[in-house]
Image (cartoon, rainbow over the protein chains, first blue to last red):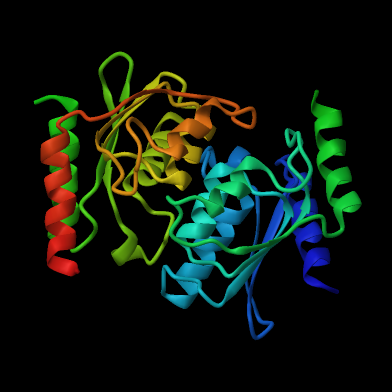
Length: 148
Length: 148
């Protein structure tokens, strides 16, 4: 099972818990999985507990460092502004994501991701989007289809 | 003591703990202080534990909701990308900040704050910057003066 399949599994756990189905995994460059997480907003009330942030918190606790320089993040969906910032702050090496954010209006990554090339950004990870895009998009669409 | 003086007090607590001296307070529109916080990155290793995020986590736990719609955030420094996103995700009403971010190259708020006016943003708080700016800037400059 590859890492994108593992994050889809995490997203399905979120779905089972009535959370927005997004999953994230942090992987060391050696291939070791450091942390796995999914959205916890409903259960925790914490608006910062997106899958990416939960994975970063777990990894920094495990590795006892706030700089996850040798780690790559796999996530089912293009990160939001908050998570994009957290990924930069944590000095994560690469982002691999599945579905593109729904509000994206032009081709390619969103304005959020474009921020990484601005002067104000201290660390810009490499970005690889659209991996298992159809499967990842279906998860989100199916969740919001039942909610709206 | 006004709310900006209280966040400076929080920032000084961070300084005493060898953390970057930034403080944040969340205040209900009624005037009640919901949470007070300062940076905890050194002590927690968690790169997401900026003062603003810690204050949001405490407030959402206390109020048992992820939507802090009636709350205003006071913070000693202009929020970073991650915190700007968290503030939007938490539906915070207003941001009052002290020092402008050092990398700001034009007049007014940074590109981060400008993101709030983009299509991709679900909630844009009102922003009031430069409150007790000199005191708040001194805190940061004095910290980095001793570190760099």
